[in-house]
Length: 264
Image 1 (cartoon, rainbow, N blue to C red):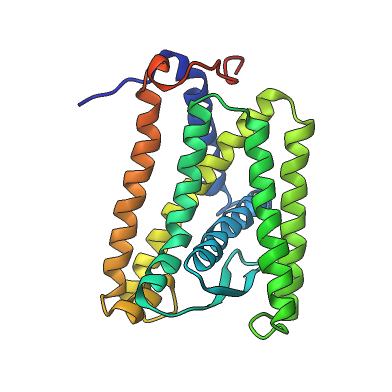
Image 2 (spheres, rainbow, N blue to C red):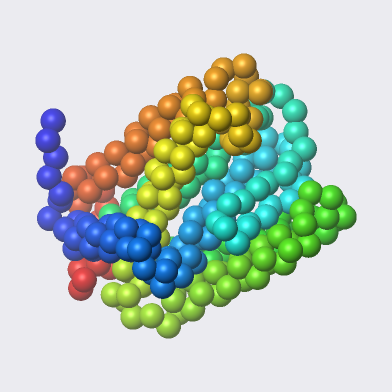
């Protein structure tokens, strides 16, 4: 069955298309122009915070404890946790990739329903701040830095504070149009990052025995890591499809509020 973008959703959808084209262009040019890579660097770190934050939240929700959350300058990250049971391992290991996809899909729905972009930016800022303070600072401090290096600890705190303050500043001082574009841009970055990370872990799982979330799943369940990667890919595609499908819903079926994207 074919769907058309609802008329009232066209401003937000066009903005999403522009953000996608800009994101793809930046990702492509960053391989050839070093300066571009510096421009996209904060976005890569933001996506890492969302990914690792998903692991941390899943750990807490399954009744386990987080010893540390760290983000590295190269854009990678780690969450050390204490837990047991294959079900907990399943949720915790899956929460990184699927959490990033869910965050992006959630922003898609947020845009479609015309809610405030400033609130979305403040929520994103608050999430990064919460992960930084609770799991990046307090957790490793009380665990005597047993699972994190001093350098990793300080970089996590520094990058988390800069991101949180930056997102809050955009929410407060940017014009409505730029705030809308920022949300669309974050949406695309989260979805692209999740897709790229899944492709990378697919090749890692199929060609090497290196440490990864898929390897953790294989150790916990006995099912090959590559199978889990394929499952995560399918679930991610379903979530993104649902987020995009929302744009085909008529306004009278979705919400009665006016869209904040009408002036885009």
